Structures are given as C-alpha cells and as structure tokens.
Image 1: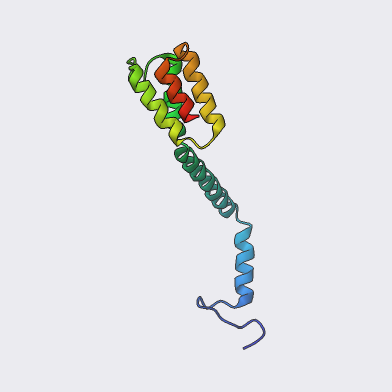
Image 2: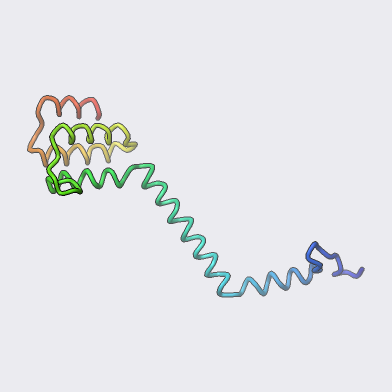
Length: 124
C-alpha cells in the first residue's frame, strides 16, 4: 500500500477520513446539533441543581407566605406552615437561603410566637 493506504474498518484511508472530518466540520447542521447538545446539557444541569436545592418547594412556600394562600387557594394552618418551614430549613444548604426564608416567615406572620422562635433558633 501507498503512503495514504492504511484502511480502517469503514474501508477509508487516513487521508479520506481527514478530508471527510474536515468537510463535516464546516456543515452548519453539525454546528447546530453541537450547540443544541450543549444547551441541553446546560438545561439538564440547571434542572438538577434546582431539584437538588428544592427551589420549587421553596418558591411555593414563599408564594404561600406572601399571598396567605397555598397553590390550591386555601389558607394553610399555622401548624402546616411551621412544619413546612422546618422541613425546608433542614434541607437547605446555603445559610443565605435559610435567612431569607426565615425573615420572610417572620415578616409575613407579623412576628413570632414561642414555638416559632424555638423552631427558627434551632434551625438557624
């Protein structure tokens, strides 16, 4: 065989493979696929981080505190709010998130009673 004649499994020489790879590299469709793949990878990573940090649960709880109603339109019991707050605070990784949620709870509730104070002082 000559200088460019080392065939691979597809029967192409190295030179043919190089030319084919170079030609495919300039195809706009290929670039669009790579871009779409990167966007999908970023979106999946963002979704994973959001789930891991329970941002959907936190947002729902913050909305309930801010509006006084849960997602079903009913007013939650104090016990339910305290239980949900404790569950969220226990699972939060960042102190700033804990403090933001605790401050929102205090402001929207108009202060704290003894049980709520104990709950927040142990969770923070």
